[in-house]
Image (cartoon, rainbow, N blue to C red; front, top):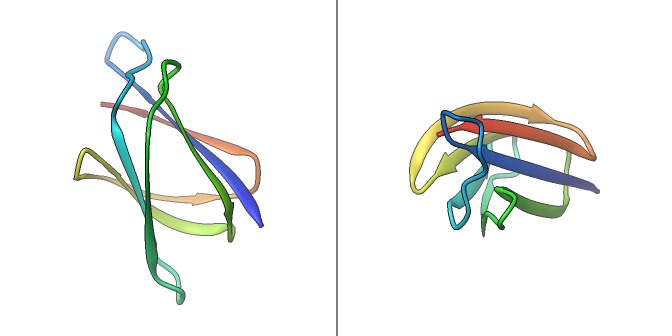
Length: 77
């Protein structure tokens, strides 16, 4: 199982707290999970399968990513 961090930053590269981050699994096993960013702008997702995910910030699609265990995806909102 894999752990994934998604860090959300503003245009000045400062962390954004309280953003609702959703990940949708785009491979054969479909599903979705949601977390909110902490004071460092990070949303933590633990114990998921590695692979492709679609990322949503406050309900808006921010693209597809492929992640591996321990990886961090940085997204500017």
